[in-house]
Length: 222
Length: 219
Image (tube, rainbow over the protein chains, first blue to last red):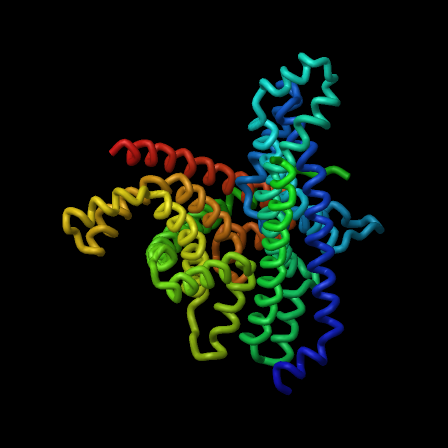
């Protein structure tokens, strides 16, 4: 059976794999962004004692390789749920690990963006009698968001690339699907290159989308 | 449910884990070395006046930056034997990581080269240096000094990426941590140790590189 035919034969498995990749990336990006922004706020505006554990979390996560986080979550969850009737799918463990990673990255981005806004602007807001939430919504957020978008797009594309790690804990996403097809066909190169091409296109579109978004929002800034 | 920490297994295997950590560091350094060489060629191609070279260079960086590293590792280790290129697993991993590092370094170097004021190069031309001399003794020293911080950040990120070698059973730290956690069920201890070792090494390497940078940037 030649390569293209075998792709058609396995189109169901490939589609499932694609959907799993998309689902893992999407949920990890969304959860990671929301949690990351919250942590970023706490690190920037929280008091000394609240700050420390979150700062520690972010610094730790940035020093641990993604694969180690993933394996740790996967094996720990498996271990802790021993003897319980609850099961956590590998996909769920994967999403937990990826969103944890993403949240640490986003937290750093949010902190950087918020801190880069000059203090004078907050003072100016106070001077004209705005409350903190008004300053926040009308002055800080719009500027922080514009600054955060380019690096955030990078983080999103890192997450999409990182979702391949899930293959190593048995999530049947694209890479594992290819791995199984390789096992049945005996040839490896075309299948892995095909998967590589899908990821390449996915990431290239994310970059383009990012560029587009940047232009759109950057325009409003002026 | 109670869990009793027992680091006995870790104590007995700490030699293996540290060895794995050392192997990871070695792989990262070697790959960075090859990556720098590749990156230099790609960066000079990117800023050259030849459009074909420029496109080749940007194709290379885009390809390796937008494809997941794990897929690249699988292509090199499982795929290349199809066309007769068979490499030992560590060699294959270093090969992949070097190409990957080359793509990132190319972007870093390109930015570094573009930041060099035009006048400096023109000054070189005015005193009659050849093109190679301008590159070797004017552009490269200035560029390297400017991109040192990005290079050391990237070395740390490469070191973290060496954990992916566990996927093709290269005996580095993540491989041993996984082995211990699966075979002895000391799950907490194994991953805690691995995480601590990685974090400590990352910060140690970062600290040492910052010192080195400070030394070199005033040299």
